[in-house]
Image 1 (cartoon, rainbow over the protein chains, first blue to last red):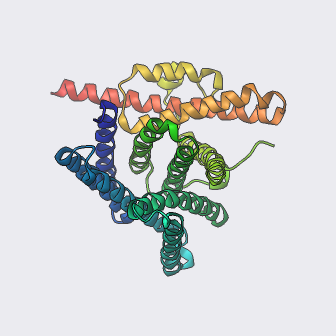
Image 2 (image 1 turned 180 degrees about the vertical axis):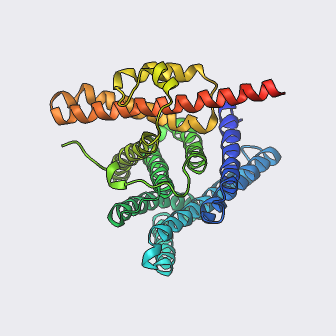
Image 3 (image 1 turned 45 degrees about the horizontal axis):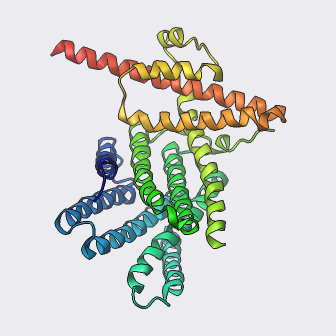
Length: 232
Length: 133
């Protein structure tokens, strides 16, 4: 049985995800950041259907188990493509859209092959383990890619504040998830903790993006080099 | 071993992204001027001091909360605690670090004052709507 904490974070997260899309539409930024908004809609639908499956079949059912992990993998892949769309925004002056798309697809394929190689011994539960492994690896790949994107922002002197905040908030999310998965592997006996933290992490991105859409106008500019100033 | 490496990388990158994200929030608010009313309430004229942060946060909590502000305020609160930790430890040994943490703490206070300004105008709008109704 799920507790009130899970239900509350679930509801808050769904409301915030819908809020991001509403804010984007309200600020006329839905089409400009289409992949980010589509990912939010995918997350929202995944949450709603997950609740439906839970309500219909129960927490211990194999239907819920499979739906949970498959929808998780699907949304992680979606987030990965949302990140690659931010690459396209940052590199748009270099006309590198096709290269970004090909690179993202090849990296996804590489991560999938790597995940398969890790789980191929467990023939009995291979598909499920593969899906879980793929999600974990994609979070780490996403983190590395976000870091590289941040490097590109600094190098190319990208000044669009909205874009900078999208990238930094994605970096925070990916690093939280990657750290959580690593802790889960290092301390498996604290499963109750590592299992409940992602629900809190999930609320961070919609909140951050709601704030960005509402408070930061598209024309707002910021020198990213100023953010990276270290004390001397 | 692999999990430990991933953990270390994730924590280091998390700290970096978190600090940059907070500084981007602060940089946006630093461009906004405070109204004379908020300047009077908070005692902040041009530059803010880190010592005033708690007081401004207390004032902020007196106003009705706005959902879209909550994330930024919590993030800056966390960033301020991180700066306090640095201020009390590493900054004692390095004077440049001390100056940097002091400036950053002051900017956190200014961010809180800007949030206070927003909340006050929001409360005022709500009151005006109620009066009209």
